[in-house]
Every structure is written in structure tokens, then in C-alpha cells.
Amino acid sequence: MRLSKGNVEDITFNGTGCAISVASSSLMTDKVKGTSVSDSLDLFDKIHRLLTDENDYQTEGLDKLAALSGVRQYPTRVKCASLAWHALKTALTGSETNTSTE
Image 1 (cartoon, one colour):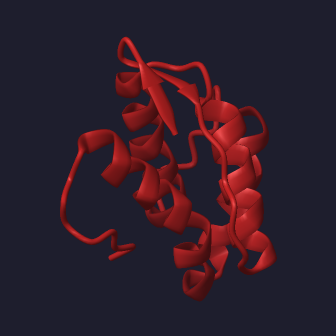
Image 2 (cartoon, rainbow, N blue to C red):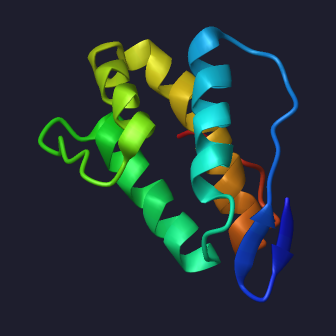
């Protein structure tokens, strides 16, 4: 990830995993590239709620990311869909703790 003047100038994903994990990572990089750090963190919060909150089905503004809403029906797969997002949050906040999907 390359940041410039408070914006995510460039971001890539290079890894392996299940289809849900790879798809979520790819969609994430496409969506946050060119956005501000603040907007990217807001998007993390929205995706986290989408994946974990039974009462939050708001997909407005998510475009292709809205497809991830179906993962909520498979609790064991939520971690697959959220792993890259947690890594993004850790990187953007400069946290020195280990990334966790808990």
C-alpha cells in the first residue's frame, strides 16, 4: 500500500486463500484505491457491520462489495471475507498489534 497526503494512492493484494478471501481482497483493493484514509476506515466499519450485524443490511454505495452480504449466512466464512479488511485497518491506523479477525 502506498499512501500520499492522507490518501490510499495505490494498494495491491498478493496472496492465496479460499475464493471468498481472495474475492473480498480484490474487491477491497479496487474500492479503496484513490480514497482517503478516513473514507477507507469508514468503509472498513461498514463492511464489518455488513458481515457481522444481523440487522445491518445497508449496501448503499458498496457497489460490487454488496455481494459480500451473503457471507453473513455462513458464520464460519465471515473471517474469510474480513481478513483483508482487518489487515487494511491495521495498516491504515499504524497499529503495531497483530491483525485479528476477532
